[in-house]
Image 1: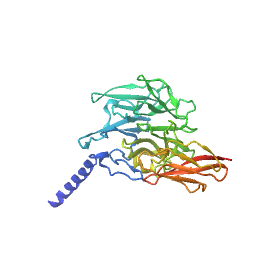
Image 2: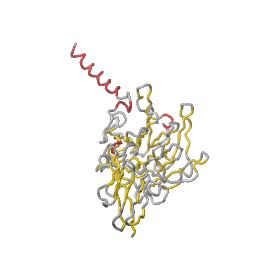
Image 3: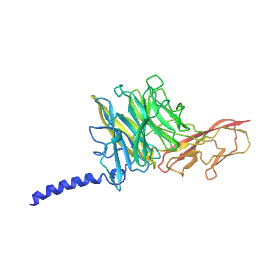
Length: 387
């Protein structure tokens, strides 16, 4: 009798374990550290299935992600919703079940779902940007976001900021490469599209994610001829300019393809797609997630212009309190690094630089900001001393 009961209890235990993974925040998964982990293995990320592009709604109670069919390059969107404390089993998203669709993204207000949809009669090779809106809590009719966002080229990976500005990728330049674009709402319409010139390069840029408040942007770029896409980050400074894109660390970017970034609305986790290729081609694609402790670093928010001072005169320069900013750290340790002339003194409490130059010439002072995770960023300030 005992022999018969034990297998039954064991099976119940396995079922119970699986059920528990559908409960709680993020499907009951243990939160990752600074090393990326497969997200919700065997629930969202299933071996042999090609998942890509994940998005949570702002209230973290809805999830959408894409499935790629490498046989015909079609796409399907899966969906799950959290009721009380339990997630539904992810299944095909019914409003779009008859379409070839990819890369879902919830708007920051949770009232829309953006996605890419295959254009008819193009063998799934060209996509436009579409939007599905919620009406009284239910999904309504889908609509294409027309020209100048969707064109005869391939547009994909769209996302929105809080003010409705749309960011997306497109290969409309005619050179076969994808670049990043944005378009602001004007009286409820998108009328002008701008290329993000300071971010775009001579390589493919795509898989764009914009922070709802537009403080930062994460995107993928083909880093080199020998390597596939990697993830980069750029921040918006005081003047509205994007900083030089920085490659995310080597724990995130590997020899595989890292694409389709998404950051949780509390800025705590980065989700992305890792695509693996072997000698036979496209082998695996899963959703990964990682803590943003090493993703967000201090950045120069309000650069200091160069100053010209007289030799032998005492000069005091007040540094802006927001010289540096950090997405997830308010208190930064600011210092003037040791490679400095003896006549420069920095009072970090008052953010004041005092100088009494003893020699003429052009000097570069280097300030550094360190956050609580020991991420460091430098800022150079040029001082010209005239006789």
